[in-house]
Image 1 (cartoon, helix red, strand yellow):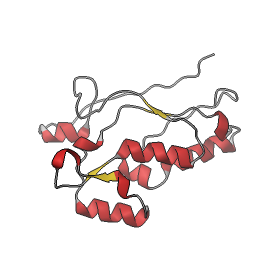
Image 2 (tube, one colour):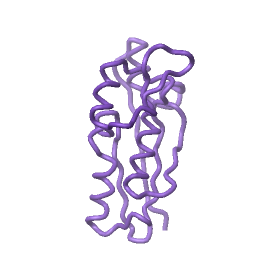
Image 3 (tube, helix red, strand yellow):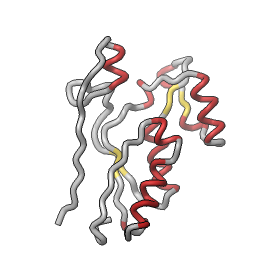
Image 4 (cartoon, one colour):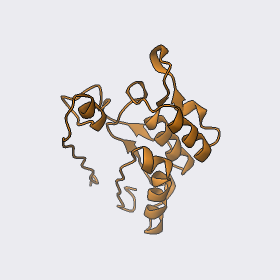
Amino acid sequence: DPKEKIIAVCHAGWRGALNGIVGNTVAAMEKIGASRENIIAAIGPTIWPENYQVGPQFAEEFLKMHPGGEQYIVLPNNSTKEHFDLPGFVLDQLRLAGITNPVTVGASTYQHPELYFSYRFASHQNKTTGCQIAIIALNG
């Protein structure tokens, strides 16, 4: 919220996203003086659905927690395995929290390992570590 000079960051991996970190972060900002209509939100680099295979058990659990969320379980590129649209889900969670016009910045972490660390990509390459940093700041 640039008007109130309140800023926050949260990591919304699948567990956090499913358990409400987006709405909880907006509520925490509001508790200290931010207003939803002034909050500007962006999703940084993340894994995109075409590389985020999850399988039927995840899909089943997700739909139990979020009935009506079938649009986030996708079968990209003629795949027969379920994939999860994490950025789409997080964007919609922001909208449900009253944030207008959230955006995504950056590319797919999985598809661009030269730019970003992706645990999933690293594990597919038999690697176990990597680093990534995110910085947010108020302008002005």
